[in-house]
Image: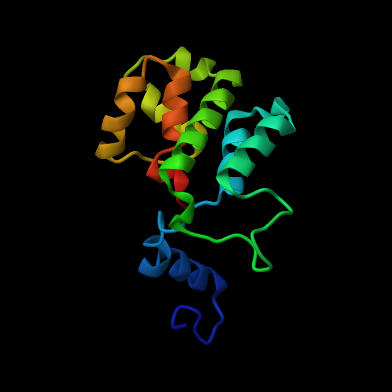
Length: 158
């Protein structure tokens, strides 16, 4: 409120909000729902022509079929979506989507740059060392690298 001040400085207020620890510290604390995850992968890879079968099958297996919520409250949020069963389903869907995507930008890059390129492609700004170590074995297999990246904690949360 101090940033807003008596002059009603919206620029100062916006800056104060966007740089506040409460705003910036929340990154990676909200688990994306299956629909958010799947739509994000499809959009990031530019594979919208996959058709409804993969989408329907994946969302049904993940427990979030559109228009069929579990109850009147809708679907649950949070870590309920992060199970070993959902990881297997997400992996299969991601691999299928990655195999149908144009990954030439990754394939043409040197193996040392591929992890960063995948991060840029899917909208992850920077990978922590732990995730880089987990992704490194897949750098020679672009589709597997993408599938692993979209199943990383940095992509599964926002």
